[in-house]
Structures are given as C-alpha cells and as structure tokens.
Image (cartoon, rainbow, N blue to C red; front, side, top):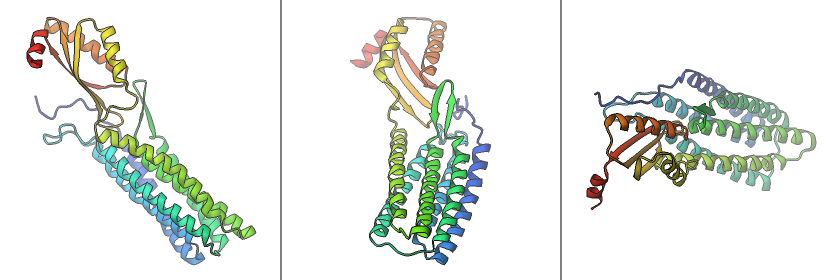
Amino acid sequence: MNIVEHRLRKRDTTTPKKRVFIAIILNIMIVVLQLIYGFVSNSISLLTDALHNLQDVVSLIIALIAIMIVQKLPTKEMTFGFLRSEALAGFVNSLLLILAILTVIVFSVHRLINPEEVEGVYVILFGLVGFIANLVSAKMLDFHHHHEEEDHHHEDINIKAVYLHLLSDASISLGVFVGGVLIYLYKVYWVDPVLSILFSLYILKESISIIKKSYDILMEAVPKHIDVDRILQEMRDNFKDIKEIHDLHIWSLSSHDLYLSAHIVVEQMSIRDYDKLLEKLEKFFRERGINHITVQPESEEFRCEILH
C-alpha cells in the first residue's frame, strides 16, 4: 500500500478561490480610492479606514493561499496533508485583525480627545463606498462561512476570520459615513470615533473566539462540542463486546476533519466479527461528527501484559 493513501475528501475549492480573488480586487480598489481622497479631504478617519482595508487585502491573500494549500494531497513527508493550514491562517488572520482593531481604538480615542475639522462630503462619499464594497465582499464569503455535512455543523475558520475582517471594515466604514453626515450637517466631530470604538469592540470579541478555535485545533485539543465522558458511556451502553476503552484521543486537523484513536479490549472474536464491530463503531462515531477513526483491538491477556 502506498504510504500517502488517505481517506481525506477532495474538496471543491473553485468557488471559494474565485470569490476570494474578487474580494481582493475589490478591496485594493477601496484602499486606493480612500488613500487618495483621505489626503485630498484631510480626513484621518478615511486614511485609517484605508489602512484597515489594506489589512483586509493581506488577510484575503493569506486566505487564498490557505485554500489552495488545503486542497493539496498528502505526501510521504506530510502524510496528513495540509489541512491544518486552515487553522493556522485563521489564527494569523485573527491576530492581525486584533492588532488592527486595537490600533483603530487607540486612534479613535485620540480623535475623540482632539477632534479635527475635515471635508464632510468626501468622508460621506468614500465612507459609503467602503461600506458597500466591504459588505459585498463579506457577503460573497458568507456562503462558505458554514457547511452542513453528514448532519453536523462545521465552520471554515479561515474563511470566517476573513469574513469578520470584511465585516469589521464594513462596520467602520459605516461609522465613517454616519460620522461624515453628522460632521457635514452639525459639525459634530466626536461621533465618528465613538462609532468606530463601539464597532471595534464587537469585532474584537468575535476575533478572540476565532483565535480560541484555531488554537484548539493547532494544539490538538478535544473540540468543545465533544463530550468525551458521554461518548465513553454511550460506547459502554451500545457495545457490550467492548470490555475496556483506553488511550482515547479526539482531535481536529481542520474544522471539517475530526479524528479519533483508541484501544479497545474485546473478547476473543474472529476477524469477520471484528470487522462488523468496527463497521458499527464507524457509524456510531460518524453520527457524532467524528469522521476518521483508528481503533486498535486488544485481548484481556494482552492488555494485562501491557499494563504490567
């Protein structure tokens, strides 16, 4: 048997790649326009929004690379393939987003203390352009924000991280737009930074959630929705042939691929009977969202030798 044979699914990534690429082009256009008219209007808020959109371009490029890497088949050196690139990209994207959000908050507080006069018309126009463009980009990626597979809910944390990036920029651009309207009509300069702070705090909370999920995958932690004690009890209740379960490990390679390995102590049985037991175990674990299992059978005598 070839060492790189693996039961990993080959995913269709044509649509995600195409939509992420379109979002990259759209965000580059936003950055260029906001930089130009930020300088023309003397609007620091527009320039800040442009820098935040530039961060989105970087995040989208990282996400596109991750999508392509995940599709690569396993090799002799990388026998599990490159599935963890999704979690790595989600982790990096979220860290960058948190840094960008903290920068925006600091800047907004400074602007709140030291308001400056700007050309409200340009702020309104390009705040609205940024809001619409980012919202369109986020909507394009929202289709891949979650998946229903074998009756279990999965999230692509890489795409979700970029989705949140775009959503954060749409929110901040909306704040810039609303602030621009109020500045133009009432010369109320403190509204823009206040809205930016409120939106930033919300996105910060969501980003921390993504970092936690990515971290758990990278550290091979048991997924939060898996109750190990409950699974062990259900196995004891449903499989009377299994006398003991030990060395149980459950971990994720990606948001789609949940793995389990375990040693089970069984009574003496034929290979055919064990195949039937294994088939039932695979069905049992699939119903609980675990789609890759490795189970090692042991006799009670063998187990005693190992333990002693």
